[in-house]
Image 1 (cartoon, protein in one colour):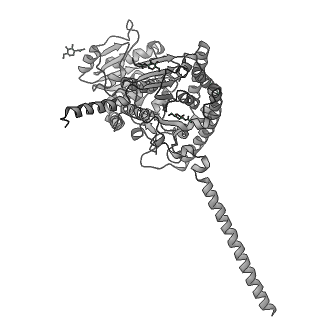
Image 2 (cartoon, rainbow, N blue to C red):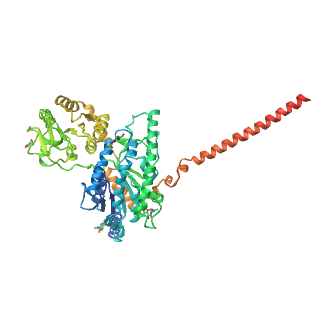
Image 3 (cartoon, helix red, strand yellow):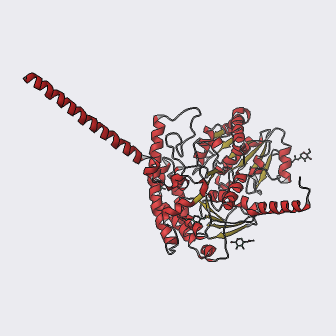
Length: 531
Ligand SMILES: *[C@@H]1O[C@H](CO)[C@@H](O)[C@H](O)[C@H]1NC(C)=O
Ligand SMILES: *[C@@H]1O[C@H](CO)[C@@H](O)[C@H](O)[C@H]1NC(C)=O
Ligand SMILES: *[C@@H]1O[C@H](CO)[C@@H](O)[C@H](O)[C@H]1NC(C)=O
Ligand SMILES: *[C@@H]1O[C@H](CO)[C@@H](O)[C@H](O)[C@H]1NC(C)=O
């Protein structure tokens, strides 16, 4: 193709320039969330970019679990008092999360205010302010972790870089204003149970969706009022900062942690809405530790993974329940990997059980011999099992676990039973039901193949679109015009008003004309009569 050496040289230079263009960009991640699950997702996007060779600086409150050598972490932890306040707040949120989500959000709004002041404090911390005060720092992109904290977008303006918002939710009403995503309440309700395929929404479903959306509207209004105040508090001393509503019109993209093709809802999204669901799951599993690889590899009758998460240590489960579980599991022909903290004191010895303090859960679930995942219905574990297409038995205890388990069972990916009332016989029968009835594994396997079947993996999407925004210093050309329009203009309400006025004028005109003709006719006939 390229024979001439000088052309070869030019080709190499061009290639280097092309590759070099978005290489080693300086990226800033603002991830102040106090929720570990949010931070895992946000750090996973940062890590993908660090692996690509970019220089990533992140600001966090929590100590991140996901890290990389190219990621420089600035951690601004909460004080002891703030931490206590936080754990109380989360407890309240989880306890009162049973009914309508919007209502429970409104109810806890006062308590939650603390989360936002903590976020504002973090942005005003001296080490964080240095990121823009020190003029040696140059950033090409800001990733802003979302938690109803639009005021944080001001930081991107401070470091004069385009911004992508990273949100651990599917496309949703609270984010619509940033990129002009349409609100489609009649058929794409936010936070609804999965809709039945091949059917529209009933009147009742639409009524509930409308009510929910209305509450979110009120919530968004109150949120923006608070955010505007915090924006002034953090950046108000700088006359170069734009007006708050102008600032919001400058978001290049939003990364949503969802995948509509497999999870729904099926709805229209603007080009600036990018779905990166599954970003925290490895595309290819790492090799397992030697002992686990052999144990699973030799499991000719299949194997079961049992992990009740990191919060539910052996001590939280009564010894009686553990005995019952051991009695059932040790008699199975399947092999079992059991996550157990205290290896000195295991539930009992059995040739088919391997205890381990630490588990590469994602890599184990990827193993073809795993036929069942017994878990505590944590969101992370369920997502991983869905990704790898493994049926589940969930043993929820508290917080969001019962809800997660219900949703999993509704999708047909497995069964659920309470850990606190576990009985030997039902535990045994439920395990056998999931292992022998193909419908669970088939349903979750078919979800898994839809989930993974994408033109670009979640990681490739993050790299591509982040570098895209870096290349064009934003994505203004992708922006929906609706971002710059008022509610009235966006919904053509003024045009409807004009039509209504014209219609009324026409009716008035016709009426007057009709009256005139009628009275003329009347007077004529009267004249005739009197003649
Ligand atoms: C949850 O909400 C109810 C009111 O619906 C309230 O009485 C209760 O105290 C709340 N729980 C907590 C822990 O705040
Ligand atoms: C990475 O970015 C930080 C923050 O701007 C900067 O201090 C550091 O020097 C950069 N490192 C490299 C290798 O460019
Ligand atoms: C929008 O972002 C660009 C950087 O991408 C910046 O130069 C510009 O000043 C920002 N405008 C506003 C109104 O924030
Ligand atoms: C697995 O099988 C191999 C022989 O195929 C054997 O050497 C090894 O000890 C077995 N490992 C376990 C854990 O059973």
